Length: 232
Image 1 (cartoon, rainbow, N blue to C red):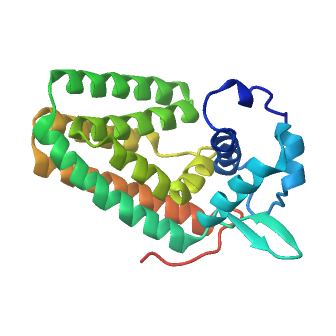
Image 2 (cartoon, rainbow, N blue to C red; image 1 turned 180 degrees about the vertical axis):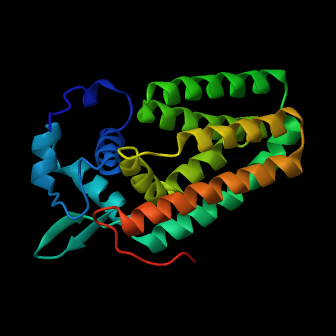
């Protein structure tokens, strides 16, 4: 890995910047499940002192993304299906509540913003650019939270869905059902444009449950570093 020399150029705390960098490598699979990760290695990787590294590893441990074994070492945690299940439950229930509020508050600017995101996602799908597709996916869900007037709830969802995202990001290397996801997004946005909270919530629940079923199948059957498990 190449050192990140511009971390200190930002006004954000160094530990936050370092956390983002390490998390991205975990989500992308560059730091794979079971891989060793030490303060010395991270220090050499990013050319930073051990103090912010220690803070980052503690935070990652609290999130269940690294496992610490005293006298042995620190390792990237396996993908735990129970964590994925609980994260999916939290996301589904919070987002269905959010979209109901969004349906009652959306204006033409919000409708236009969502339409632009859908166009971006369609372009990404046609280009086969699944990273860009994923980014547009995230942007749509974030915008719905903003329309609902509760952007902080999206930040809570982002933190809770990290374990789902590990599988989703790894699954980008496979054939994600992008056409189906895009169709579901279009139905969600159409229901919002119609200001229909019941249909919007039903479409969101169907979408998230479908994503979860896909993620669970991939994690259990196809992903290295998954611990197995059953759908709750």
